[in-house]
Length: 319
Ligand SMILES: NC(=O)c1ccc[n+]([C@@H]2O[C@H](COP(=O)([O-])OP(=O)(O)OC[C@H]3O[C@@H](n4cnc5c(N)ncnc54)[C@H](O)[C@@H]3O)[C@@H](O)[C@H]2O)c1
Picture 1 (cartoon, rainbow, N blue to C red):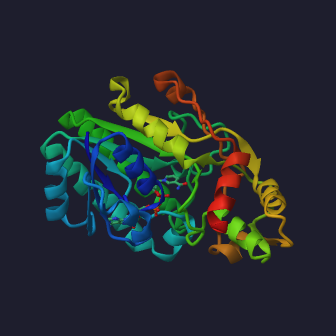
Picture 2: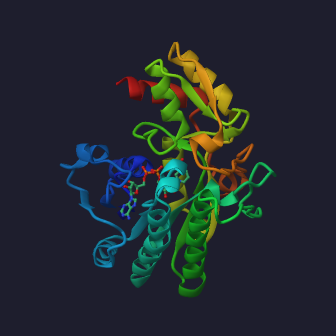
């Protein structure tokens, strides 16, 4: 395979790039390093099948040139992370909407397969859990920035499905749930790296809200396996899939577990959402993926337990 990975210097992107190279594929990366880091890919620089440009997907000429070289596009470049989106609402909408449209447009020129990375944020504050791909999306008002991110990713899905239906562009949409692992930074609101860093430094572990909200965390290696399985599966073309782990934990239990795992002396503190994010911030009490569709389509099964995932992240930050 010749693959373009947009956002390939990011957390998930860099793991995907490594997996593609390990399979013998040739890989091109485009990344503007807005939230990604060059050190995530620097070890690949001398690989004969690895190429990269530091540029934005908003540059049509560059995207056109790169999509011409490949047969598959993994589109991960996006504004990511609740905290980042709240601080950069305009840039986030531009990147996620205009950027994705450009990538799809250029991929369509040569009918190159596009794997579009969407998100569980799509489901909004839906109460019925686990979330199934066909479930309704329930969003709050437009004055709450978070729902702009959710909506921008929903537009990406609409655009992808429209290209598929009208232009016969091969697309696969993956809705990633919380994904974790090495190279993820806590800088933009990701909870596990933030807690692990706080615990290792014996700083207070700061829970946003009452900590009773639950999430499911998936190791990045399982996400990469799922994506590579879907891209090889003809029945996945034109379809939307949840991708993640369905092992559920409360955020409070997560903090306690990380504190124990790191033998930390940190105290656990609770910060109201309005203080952590913005006035009127809304959160969902539970978020659990229904994985039936991906299980039935490619036999997907996450391999890494939450305990193992946490051990990996702790080892990474210690190093
Ligand atoms: N990590 C998660 O838990 C999670 C959950 C749901 C969905 N996702 C999706 O997975 C994808 C990857 O996320 P991630 O967690 O690796 O985050 P990340 O921030 O590490 O990766 C995004 C990458 O895109 C790059 N980028 C941003 N704007 C760009 C632009 N205009 N041009 C070129 N590059 C640009 C960033 O520099 C970064 O390297 C995103 O599309 C995200 O929405 C991630």
